[in-house]
Length: 93
Image (cartoon, rainbow, N blue to C red; front, side, top):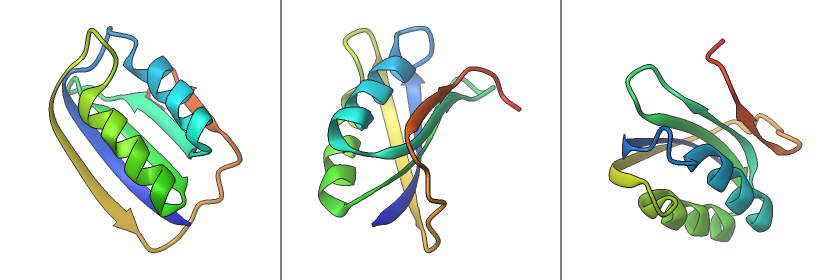
């Protein structure tokens, strides 16, 4: 299991990106969350096995049909947070 922090930039808000991300995460068994950021990007914390995360990253680089992804960065953390599911967070806390 690995933990990745992923930031997706481009036209990724208001294009069903978060809901699509959840659907793909659920399909792949990836756990964590997705949230819009004030700068217009989307932040994702994702945990899963290497194959699931690589497949998930492929989706993040494209996004849903209306998205225009311009950049994707990810970092790996050493510590798992133990998420039980994948959720869409509506508001920045």
